[in-house]
Length: 376
Image 1 (cartoon, rainbow, N blue to C red):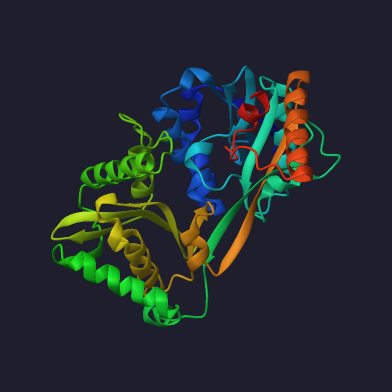
Image 2 (spheres, rainbow, N blue to C red):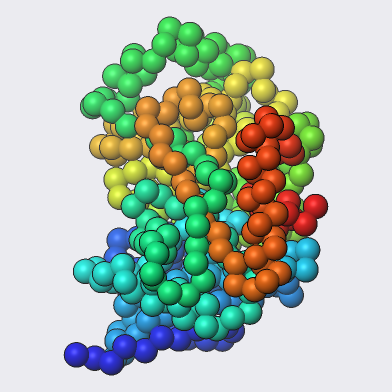
């Protein structure tokens, strides 16, 4: 049997060197694009604040074969060093990447190696699907930094059912939903000929992504919300991630056009027989016509007509997802301390949450950033 060797990737140079082996493992495993080398590398290359971050990717080799990847990175926040998923800000689900037939004990060995490498105070791993291999780290006796379930759950809504055609799905919706869809089409049609379509592989993505970013910034400003790395001026993150989807042959970019002008965009990808809705937005100037809702219903029907068994809205509990979703999964998170400083932050986080539950204090909206909240 080949000797097992663990390695921690810290540099961009080494990340590039292991690309071929990682990509081959990802292709064999059937894992989501979020665990692919291309995704992690594109995220790292497009970071605007790399000086705050360090790669902390654990690999397992057996002979010359790569059999496991635990894609981690650290970030400095409020004086703390937090270990989290690499590309966390761009990924809806986090997990380890394992060769087929590999036991979950491999995840525990990689986690112990991450702890031995050090360089962090607190670990926070979130967006874990119910079948995530990384959940094995919650089991006692695994060694390394002990992880515990954290209270920051997220919802994952999906559309899945017995429909064999998009029309059958549409007819199964409530009368109000069907009326809203037709009303939206009517209002939009008054601005010019209405067209829903999938962008062809030869069409340039840059103009559509520019429209998407413009729409999203306007929407965030209207609702008094802060921008994210995807939509900041000059950010390369969204184009980089979309390019990964395109080069992997997964990208499905849908647009809704009125008179040739784009009024809604949905950047999706298809894996495992599922249409996954990555980023969707619309022109706030056309909000009265609900172009985002019209586009979403169009791509749901398109997906069912082409034999896809699920439409996955990925993480987040926005209202529209619950209205259309027929299945919901809970994405768990887990946290653990490595240093006394991290233990203090973990204690503050747990205490604050316990007090809010006991006394019914609403507190501030959960930012998904436990260190910032604990240090506030």
